[in-house]
Length: 72
Image (cartoon, rainbow, N blue to C red; front, side):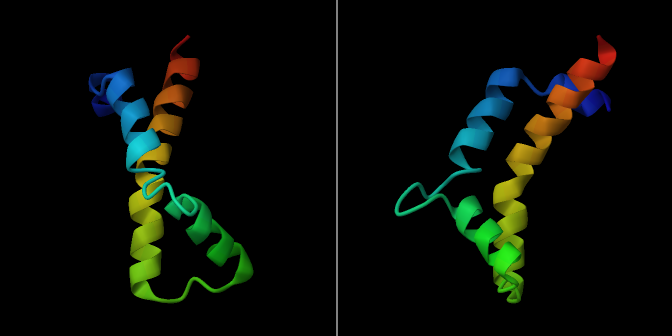
């Protein structure tokens, strides 16, 4: 988990807010894909890849936060 410690906080936050939410209009892509997942409409490989791509920065930020909590 040393790689999480090497990633600066500002980079993790900026990645989550930009790549994690892009494109911003008409709604964030991650939100659209999560709605598709809940509705059971997430079947195309490109949509699954898109969900993983937009969720990765949020997952990284979550893991970094959890690591910080565990270390303290």
